[in-house]
Image 1 (cartoon, helix red, strand yellow):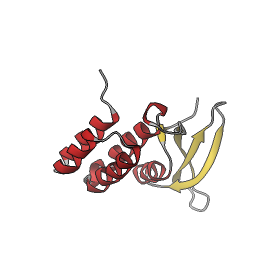
Image 2: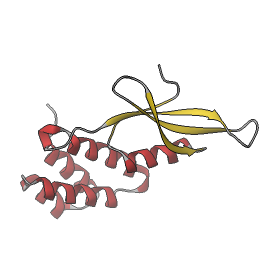
Image 3: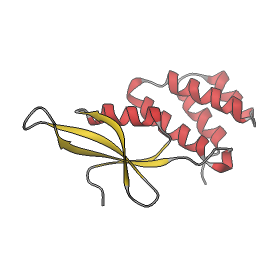
Image 4: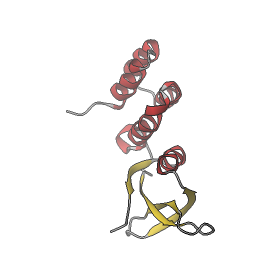
Length: 134
């Protein structure tokens, strides 16, 4: 049995001591309120868990059953040679389109985790793969 979006929001809020907000999430049937509570959950999450909270809740809110637009996409973070420093690598974020082609997001970083945080912050993410595209 999977949790409803209200239960998922409430669980993340409760974990951060936001018990009043968690109670509101469980009682609410209004998508606008859910959106506000998701933002509270993301902001109050500790740094080490913030990307996971944002990814999980934004993806759930994107699902049509929860009133979302179903715009989530898959991404791949691929290593490539640094254009100016021989022997060094950068990671570039690519969006995987419906026809399995790649679209460049124009986001690049030497730090994979930092790049992952940027992608989750800007897009509704279904999944992120680190490595090569099949």
